[in-house]
Image 1 (cartoon, one colour):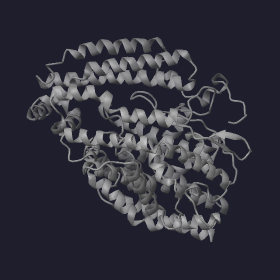
Image 2: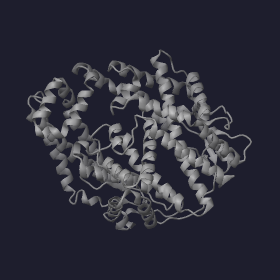
Image 3: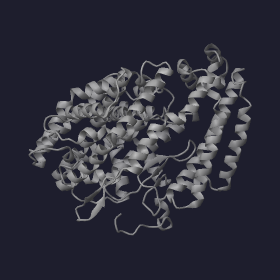
Image 4: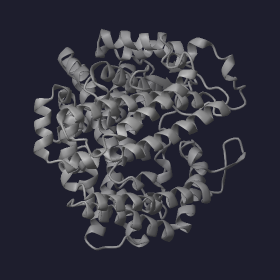
Length: 600
C-alpha cells in the first residue's frame, strides 16, 4: 500500500467483507458451544476401557467424537477468522487463545481413542463394520487406522515417545529461532536510493529488481549470513534427519521416507517417478536458462539473475469486479454449476476482499464443515491478485463440493489433493489469458510467468525432494551430514538442475540452509506432484471436455474418503505412473518453445 491511506475495517463497504456473522449470529452461542464441547468430552471419557466392547458402543463413540470436533472446529474457525480481520482486537485475541486451550484439553482427554481401538483384534473391528450399519460410514477411516497397526507400539512405549516428542521437535525450534529471530542479513540500497534492512519477506522482490547491482547485493548479504553459521546449521539439520531416521526405525519402517509417505498410503514409487521424469526434462530447463542469459544480455548468468522477469510487465490495474468476471470466464470449462456457484459465493460474501488496518496479510481459504468456505484476500488490483482469487476460490469450491457430499469424517483434504484444486484453476486462468491476449509484450510476460511457476514449483521442489532423499539415505547408511557434505551435495545438484548456462558461484551451496521446509521431512514433493496432477487435469478438461470435467467434479466431491492417489484416479490421473508428470513436462516444453520463438 506504500504511503496510501490504509482504511479502518469499519470504513470498508459491507459487500467486500465476508459474512462471518452467519457462523454466530449471536456471539453468546460461541461460549455455550465451548462449554458444550467440554461437557460432551466428559461423556466421551466414559468410553475409555469399553470402546470396542460392542459394535454399537464403537459407533456411538465415533458419532460423539465427530459431534464434539465439528462444534469445536466451528468455534475455532470463527475466533481465528475474527482475529484475522483486525489482529489488534483484544476481544478476538482472547477468544482465539481460549479456543486453543480448550482444544488442547479435549485432545488430551480423547487421546486414549486410537491406541485402544488398535488394541482390539483386527477381526473384531472388521466384523463390527459388517454387522453395524452405523459403522459403514467409518469403514475407510477404521481400515486406515488398522493399516498402520504394525507401526503402533505398546501403550507404554507410545507413552514414552509422546513424552519425548517435546524434545524431538527441538531441531525445528532451534532452526526457527536462528532463521527468524537471531539472524540478520544487513541492508540493501533500493531503487529509490533508500537503505532498507534485508529480510526473508523482501528478499524475493529484491531478486526481481531490474537493477542487477541490487540483486547481487541482496543475494550476497543473504548467503553471507548463512555461511557465517553454516556449521551450527549443519549440526542442527544432521540431528533433525537423525531424529526421523531413528523414529522410523523404532516404528519398524524400512526408511524415514517410507514412514513419512505411509500416512497417505503413498508408495515410494510416486516419489521416484517424480525425480526420474524431471531429470528427463532437465535439458528443456537448460534451454530456458540459456534463453534467460541471452535475453538479459549478461556475459555470465548468475544465480541472482534467475528471478528477475525477462519481460517488463505492462502496468495495468484490474478492479475487483473485473477480476470476478475474468475468473468466471476462465473457469467456464468447469461447467455451469461450478461458475454459478462461484458467483453465488461472491454474492453470499464468502470473500473478505480488501486490506484494512490490522488485517492478516496474504490470502487463504478457510471455514468449518458447516460454514461457508470463506476466503481472505488483500486485493490490490494487480494481475497477481487475479491469480490469487482464482487459486483460493479453487480451494473454497473444493470445500463446498466436499462438504455437500461427504460426512464430517471425510470433510477435509490432504495437502496432496488440496493443491490440485487451486492449481487446476490457475492453469485454466493462464490458458484463458494466453488465448485472448493480443498485446505481444503481455503475451511474452504471461508465458514467462507460467514458465517461472513450473520452474519454482515443479523443478525447484523436486530438486529439494531429491536433496532430502539423499540426506536421509546418507544418515541411514551410517554417514554424518557435515557442512562440507551438505554444501557440496547441494551445489552439485543445483548445477545439474540449472545446466551449463549458469555460471558457478561460491554462495548457492548454502541455499539448503535457508529452506524451512526441510524440517518437515518429505513434505515438499507434494507441491510438485500436486502441480503435475493439476496441469494434467486442466489439459484433459480443455481437450476432452465434459467427460474430463465431470470426472474432475467427482474428484472435488470426494474429500478425504480414500487415499490421495486413489482419489486422483477419479479425476483420470494416476500418480503411481510417470504419465501425469510427463504431461506437465510436455506443457513446460511447449511454453519454452513459444517463448523462444517470441523472443527471437
